Image 1 (cartoon, rainbow, N blue to C red):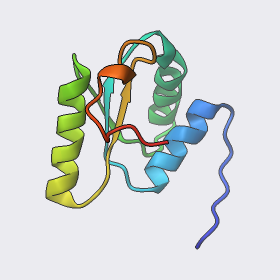
Image 2: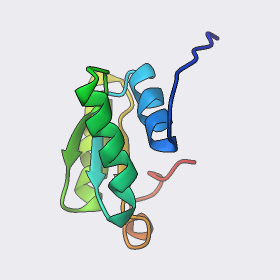
Image 3: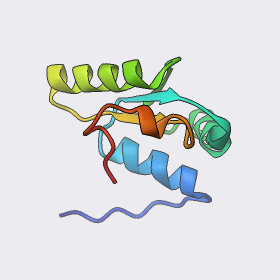
Image 4: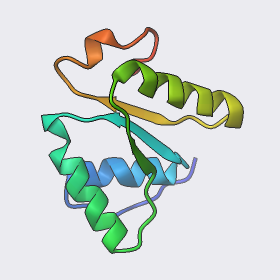
Length: 99
């Protein structure tokens, strides 16, 4: 197991750094009010020329999960889905929520 150190200023920065380091290519999102820090972190990474998963805004949680799952099935590489905290998580098809 290799260890990598990164300079980050926020949890959102650390999250996007980890996703990029793990080779996640797409970030499927049904965004809500809790996404502001991630949007800021994305803007900063892009302005600095740092790698980040391509963000895809999806209007509903279930298709977002389906798209990420389908991409993972075809490529063999896991992708990320993030949904709105209050109303998004309870309607996700199981077993898509992993902690």
